Length: 263
Ligand SMILES: [Zn+2]
Image (cartoon, rainbow, N blue to C red; front, side):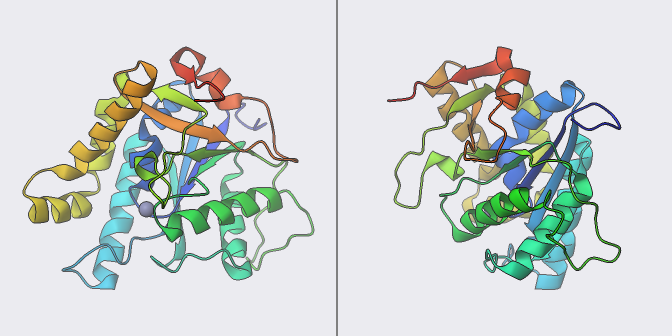
């Protein structure tokens, strides 16, 4: 763990502003209560997330909303600077993600599921997986001047569940474990409320406050699968070279429900 503070440093690295809030916001509030140092990274500023604003306007608005959400959580925030629907796992983008991850120096990283409803999320998952492998490699140099320091170790890597828990074929992707977020649901809703441009866009089109309600319905559905009122689902990357200690599961043990291996 980090030698400066001794508190674990967890970075949530996802595609767009509001993904972190929707998928793992409750889990992050748990970890904040434990004194963990939290960071949020988005690949983009959400530059295509509007039907009324220009790209420049919505990018500025959504960057500010992402920063406000991170501030509400008490987390560090950075944007990699890629564009919506153009997130691809290539060498140039990997360098930028590595620079951003090295700037935070995480012990644990959570990103998108390797399979999800849209390619931006899947490519982000691939980029972050590659970046967590590369950040501690002294010979993997980026172009930043001065260069960000090489990380001490490969962080533990976790995946949030895909949006609605489904892959792109509509098949359920089961989590390895659930986190009870019943007490954190109100904070999660307040953090998500920072993304007013997205909430308003859906509200104008559907006539109901679907943005917040939809997230709550998903959390209740997860909760119904494991005996909690509201829950979030996660999986740990257990490939060679990554930490296999159940760091998150242990830290949140009283709030975690481990799923059976087979269902
Ligand atoms: Zn997204």
